[in-house]
Image (spheres, one colour):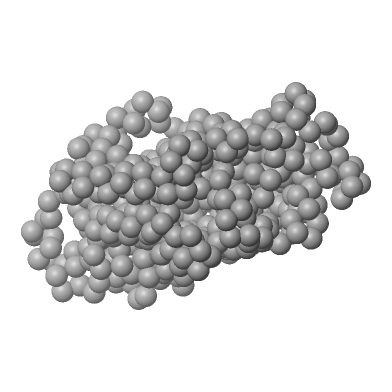
Length: 481
C-alpha cells in the first residue's frame, strides 16, 4: 500500500501526466456543470411556457442519455481512429454548439432535437477521458485514485451547475445559462489546442518492429465476464436514481419547503455533491483495503436506505405509503430533514458509483491478460476503449430510464411511492451482490508491446508499456475483435 503523497508524486512525475490529468478533469467538470445547470428551472419554465406535463419534461431530460447510449459504441471506434485528444475536443465543441441552440429553442421539438445532439457529443467526451486516464495512470492504485478525483470533480460540477444555472436564469432569463456555459467550453477548447500536450515521442525502432502487426482492440466478447455483468447494473442504478430526481425533485422541494426561489432550489439540488467531493477521494483507500465490489455493494445498500427515507420525507407519504416522516411543510424540522437527506443522497451514491469503472477496468484487463499472456499495462490499453464505452453506455441507460421512470411513477404513485419502491429494488440488488462469490486473481502477467499502428498509443507511454519489470519476454499475439 502506497502512501498518498508518494503515489501522487509518481502520478504527476511528468508534464505529460500533469497535462492529461488537467485536461481530462477540466473537460469532465465543464461538461457535468453544463448538463446539470438546467435542473432547478427547466421543469417549471417548460410547464409555464409550453404547458407540457412533468412526464414530458422527464422525456426531455432522458433524450440526452439515450442518445449518449446509442453513440457510445461508435465513440469507441471514433477514439481508435482519431485518437483520444481529437475525439475529446470535437465532442466539447459539439456540446457547446448544441447547448447554445438548446437555449435558443422555445418548443418541445427543438428541445428534444438539441438534447439528442448534446447526448451524441457527450459519448466521445466521457470515453476519451476514461481512455486517456486508463492508459496513462496504469501503475498500482493510480487509476483508482484518478477515477476518485474525476468523480470528485464531477460532483463539484454537479453542485456548481444547478447553483450557477439558477442564478443566471434569475439574472438573464432562459438563454443566459446556456450561452455562458457554451462560451466557457469554447474558450477551454481553444486553450487546449494551443497548450503543449506533452505526448510521448514514438520509439522509431519499436514502430518499425510493429508496423506489420495487426491493429488490435478488444471487443465486448473479450471483456464480458460473469463478474463484469454483475457490476454493470451498479453503473445503471446510480445515474438512474439521480436521473429520476431531475424532473420531480424541484416539485418535491417546493411541496416540502414552501415557496422558494429557483436559486435556492438549485443550491438544494446541488447539495448531494458536497459530501461526495471528499468521499470520492476516500474511495480508493477503501477499495485497496476491502476491494472495489465490496465498497460498491455497501454504496448500493446505502442508496436503498436513502431512497426509502427520501420517499417517506414527502408530505404525501402518509396518504400514499401509509406512514411517513410527518413534518410541517416549510418548518425548521423539514428544512433540516431535506438538507440531511440531500447530503445522504450524495454520500451513498459515491460509494456505489465511484468503484464501478476501475473495478470493471481491472477485471477486464485481468481477463484479457490471463487469456493472452500479456502484461496488465498492455491489457489495460487494449481493453480501455471497450470498457469505457460499456461503462458509459450503462450510465447512459440509467440516465435515460431514470427521468422517464421518475416522471411516470410520480404520475401514478407520487413522489413517496416512487422512492420507496426504488429503494426496495436497490435493496434486492444489493443483497444479491452480498451473496455472490467474487474471485481475485493474483497471477503475474507477461509483457506485451502495444501495436504502433493504432492511435491509442498517443495516450500511452511507449516506455511504460515496453519496459516491464518481469525478465520473461514472450512474442506478442494479436487480438481478434
